[in-house]
Image 1 (tube, helix red, strand yellow):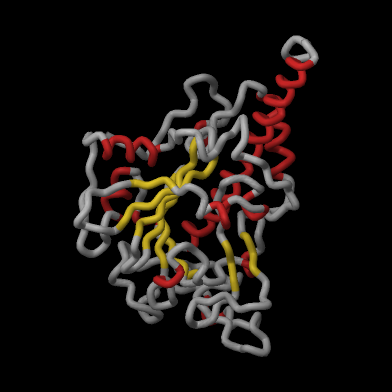
Image 2 (cartoon, one colour; image 1 turned 180 degrees about the vertical axis):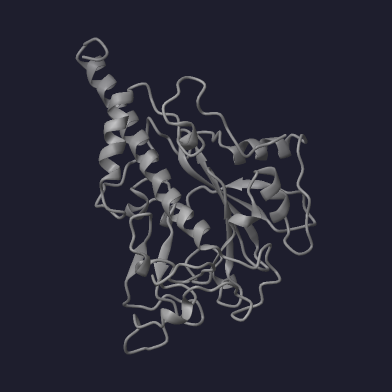
Amino acid sequence: MSFGKIDYWERRDIFPSHLKASAMRLPASLPAVLITLTSLCLLPTVPALAQLDFEKAPINYGQTEARDAVALLSRAIDEGRETLEYSDKHGWLPSVLEKLQISPDTQTLVFSKTSLQLHKISPRTPRALYFNDDIYVGWCQRGEVVEIAATDSEQGAVFYTIDQDPTQPPKIVRDRGQCLTCHATNRTQGVPGYLVRSVYSDNNGRPRSGTRTYVTDHTTDLDERFGGWYVTGLHGSMRHMGNVFALDRSEPEMIDREAGSNRRQLEELFDTSPYLRPTSDIVALMVLEHQTQMHNFIARASFETRIAGYYDRGINEALDRPEGT
């Protein structure tokens, strides 16, 4: 059985086919949600958007059962209809990717300590990320868990972990709030969502204090991208922040961009053999940056439209007015 794709389109066809896999089912008020989505997409990547109270009706984020592909796989495992195979080298990772239809070729590598298992992350042991249109998977060498985030048609981003314990049956556990400390802020459009950060990192992977940090998407200039990430692939005369460290304490934003440019391989920087691929492809990184914020815009538009409809129905009911007035 495949869990990587979910058909959210049984009621209406809204977007072109090439966008279907990434988009969420929109509510019945199509004009309103399209106007909301269009206006949000015209905003900067980190807008001053108010935090939505998604824990209350009609969203009820924490109390609503998720229906994304990871939730379906979790239920199938719990009911004995599916199982995962443990790898001595990577734990549950390869089996998770296979079940969720995520290609190892999407691998990107981040060495900055900017995520859950930060004590496992360094320039010598970067965190690997893999993704498809709807799901993101994180893996660290000798990590305690496999990290998963999935796009739910009603709830936006939903976060999960699987303990890397071969002595116990695999159990996909939904996060109940810890991930939202970083993944539900103005950097994610004020809803449970995703972000790709670019930072000035020292040679231990720690972001330099007092330096700028960028939340990147497809609008971000290349010279502000990939700080704290490894990057492979050719990009001509343009330069980025990847593959190098901020070593000057007096000028921590001074980095040698030339040294990090147009790298075909990473073996001379760290041991790539523990990873599924020896690369961190620039194309995969650029798709990741675009897709994460686009997921957030769609979730924000959906939340705002549903909340507006919810309060509109409440007002109409209180005033004894017909729906739609």
